[in-house]
Length: 159
Image 1 (cartoon, rainbow, N blue to C red):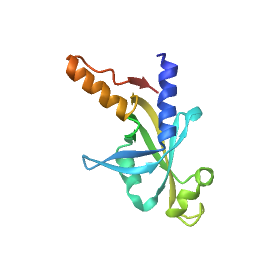
Image 2: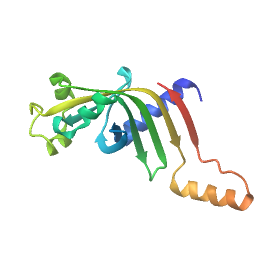
Image 3: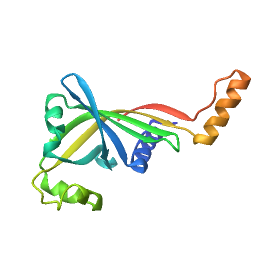
């Protein structure tokens, strides 16, 4: 695959999966939590709505390097994105990102505790397998024939 098609695969998988585990660092420890990602391919950015009381802004202020781990385990498709994060109080962006699921956490986009978490990716790696059943069949066939199975595409991509 070309670099452009690998990059397209990263964005397509991340957009399709939609949710990821955001990993930050706190006092030398790693901490992950599920987040709804808003992928903006043209900006080379992932946006998230977050709450000022969620401690992510403190962790990111101390160490802005984060990891986003997207997983579609049924489809055997995974994306890991490393990048730099920044938290802001961009009210215009909050209104752009506002959606029905956000109502589970806040009453309206005007809630003063909402923040925008912006992640600018620098590197990604993806695994795009043919699916669970096909993967099991390929692993079983490889075990019988003493060969390594072809489990699909795995690429490292500079972003």
